[in-house]
Length: 150
Image (cartoon, rainbow, N blue to C red; front, side):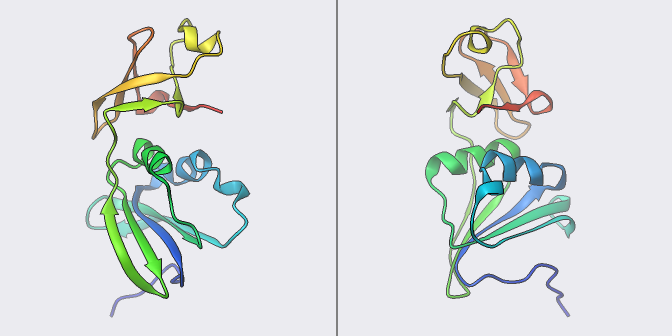
């Protein structure tokens, strides 16, 4: 018998297959701390795909493309599930775009983006391990060094 660890939602979005260690990064990058509707989340849940995974369910929330790009940085294998009246209406896997702007900061303290008011720009070099090439200083920022832009 299948056991549901996290309660179902009537309308909204489920982000599934988040690496457990990145659940709170996804919450932070989407600014969900200030979301004024129901949010359910779980970490260290069993997953055939990841071993352990995280999941976030948001009632009455559907994401725009730029928000989905943010999710893909910390959870490149995540699945987005749109729900209406307890029924799945769309299920997609997130994908990183070729270019990312204004989401994360360059890890290089000498990069111009860390001293001037310039929007960060990166080329995505690796979509699985998530490695980003800075447009300005050409240093590679990987997932171990991500700092979220404000």
